Structure formats: C-alpha cells, structure tokens
Image (cartoon, rainbow, N blue to C red; front, side, top):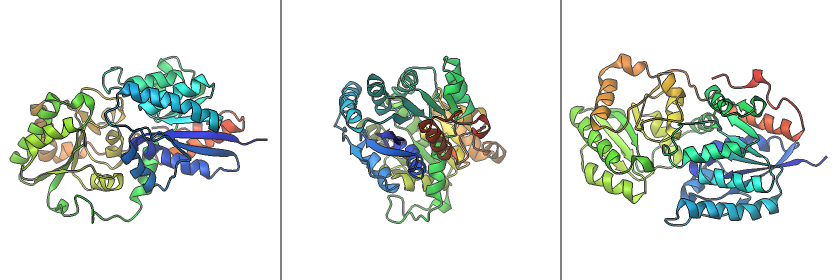
Length: 386
C-alpha cells in the first residue's frame, strides 16, 4: 500500500517553533508516512532563524516576503503559489499551525483542491474579530476548512464544540511549544555574542517587555512606555529589557520615550534561543504577545498581558497571568504589586495549563493512525488533560 504523504506548511517564527517538534516526531515514523515541509517565508528572516535552530531545511520554499505588502497581497500570493505547490507535491493531508495569513490562505488552497486539512493549535478564540487582528479571523475561517482539529487544551476543544464541530473530529494534544521549549532549554547556552551579553541580569529584578501588535500601536504603546519609565523610577533595583520590534511604528514610539532612560535596555529583536533563555532568567514578563502567554507559564514566570482580552485564557483562569490592558496607571499598579508582595508573586506560579511536552508525539501517532485508516485517531485516555 502506498504511504500517505503529509505536507506541513509554515510561514512565521511561531509556526516554525511549534511545527518543528511535529516534523521530528513524524520523521521517526517514516515507515508509515512521507512528509514534505513547505515554507511560505511570510516572515523571511525570523522564519529562517528558527529553521536553522532546529536544523530543518524546507523541501519547498515559496519566499513570499515582500516589503510593506498588505494582507490582501500576501493572501493572494499564498493562494496562487500554494495551488501550484499542492498540485506538484500532491499531499494526502496538509498540516497548518496557528493563525497566520499562511495558515488561512493555504487552507483555502487545500480546500479548493479537496485536500484535507489538519489544524494544529485549533480552537483558540477571543470572540473579537479585531483583537487579535487578523489572527482571530484567520483561526475561525481555518476551522471551517479543517477536517482534523488538534486542540491544545480542553478549553480550546470546547470552543470548537460550541461552534458545531463534531466531537469525533477534535483531539486535545497539548501545545507543541512546550515540546520545543523542553528541547531547546536542555541544551547548554551562553549569552556571549548576543545583544545582551553584558547585562547584569543577576544584579537586578529583571522585567522583560514585548509590545508590538497592530492593536497596541499608537496611544496604547505610548502609555506602556510611560509606565515602564515610571516603574524604573520607583524601583531602583529593577532592570527592564525590551527587545524592540523592527516595525518603524513601534520603534519611533519606544525610542522617543525610553531611549537613554537609566536601567531601561532597548535591544534589537533577539533570536528565539536567546529570548527563551532570557525569559528563564527574568523576574516578571509583560507582553502583548500570544506565544509568550504560553511560554511564560511554562517557565513559571508571572505574566502581565497588555491586552483587553486574550484568546489564551487558560493561564488567566489558573491565576498565572493577568490581563491588565494598556493604561499607564494600571500597568504601574500591577507591576508594583508583584514587586512589593511576594505572596502575590508566588500565587502566579503554578502547573502549566498548556502542555506536558508530549504534544508532538500525540499528533504524530494520530496522523499515522489517520494514514492507516485506524480509529479512533487518538483514544480519549491518551489526550492531554490540562
């Protein structure tokens, strides 16, 4: 019998991080399936950085990144090139991950060619189409095109069931970011040669900040920067490290308010391994990122989320994160609580609701069972329980 061919597609750094463990796990099952790795390179430099870190060489590279391209332009490019790519590769199943334009447009292309889709990290919802934007729309639309829904948590599964997805098509696997982090953090690491090699991390309580999302730009980002300025003024032992996104709309605001402020270190974007090890060495994390909301609880770091709502409420529900918005006073207040009150700080450290490091193995086993027409694809007792 012919082995089934599985295509995995990725376009951005987060996709590569979370797909890499699945690539490795599927390669261990080459007797059952063949795999093809496709890169759209929606984010060229940051994608390549992670592919290199995991020693993954795409079988197909569409190299779609263009300066200042709109979401419409990117969507059209992915659709057009993915049609030809899928016709050439002829996969039996396309695997996508997350909520990017690559994910949505590739799923449309697969649907038009009647190729089934497996969606890794399915079921995350904020229920606000503009927050996060355009990710909320991408996820919802992808769900309508998906045959195998790989939900990272029981809550994500319930969100899909609430939308009418059949229970026999939804499987709780855990989030593969936990698998990726476990692998990377096991390796020896030094900050030598990185932009933060000379920082006295062990002499301060370090707060790591990231803020770059579209919905955070303008007044909200200004408020965040003013809060950071006030925090270092109030707490002489605090060092703030802020890797500044390359988006000129982010850099202009951040540099104008925080450049030259004592104990506020503005760095260039860090590669993922450096960023991961920095997270491991800080006291508090303040972010508007989606992925960091999963990574911080995995590292047992208190997390303050610079958003009005989140599509990843598991950490919030477990008391491991707080959604604090972007009011200057609110940010200063919530950071001050964690710096003053050790009991409040310790209350935000607990067991990880996002995974147990076995998500990629569950997914690989499930895909092989699908390829061999075995049911159930993932017995309920083998699902991640959260």
